[in-house]
Amino acid sequence: MLSAKSVFQEILANDESFALFCSIAASGESQGGWENARIAALVPDSERELAPKITRHGADEDKHGRIFNALMKKRGLDPVPVPPETDYTMLLEKNGIGLAHEQLGRDERLTVQDIVTYLSHSRVTEQRASEQMALLRKHFADDPDIGRAVKQISDDEDNHLAYCHEELLRFAYAGHGRAIQRTLRACALAEIRIYRDVSLAVMAHMGRILGWSRAKSAVLAAGIHAMYAYERLGGWRRMVSLKMPERRDALGGPASAAPEFA
Image (tube, rainbow, N blue to C red; front, side, top):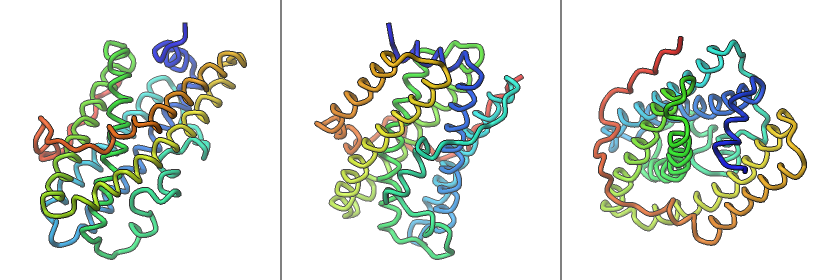
């Protein structure tokens, strides 16, 4: 019977598929680290108190990239090129979601609206990341090879999501509520489409590496399309709601160290 656990176990067991999975993940995390570092450096003067939290967010993303690279190194594997159709972060940026890399590459202060856009984009993508890591944690928290990494990254993603909720609510109370809801909706509707396309591309690459039958590939693709249909019909709304999190000031301290892998 096909399940998320059985599919990931296949990917984990094969060196080539595992290297591709970790390379895709490491690339996305590293890009997120760069983006947050640039945003922290360009925060408007009125929001300078937010800069340390954005810096912490970026440091966590960089740490995750190092963790995925360490998992490959532990198995004697090298990173592999990331197929562009599987590059979730870059596809979001190319579709106008979040702040453009061209803008972040300039030494010009961001506006408060830019920060609202950044937080809205992060609230949507961190929802996805938190859910993905929760799934991996459910099935692989006790795995001797990846368990510690999964738990560390899952905790961080939950913190990132809590931070986005808290900061967006602060901006909403300050009068940016309509802009936040408008931006969240646009981000969520774009993200679910891009996530579907990236998921299909990743599964196609994994299928070729692992020699999946046409029938198995078709079943997995149907599941991805069914998930998109659910999200398009209303599931996206979970990505745009805001509530005060139980974890307050979740990014108020320094980033935790990455676990060591022997």
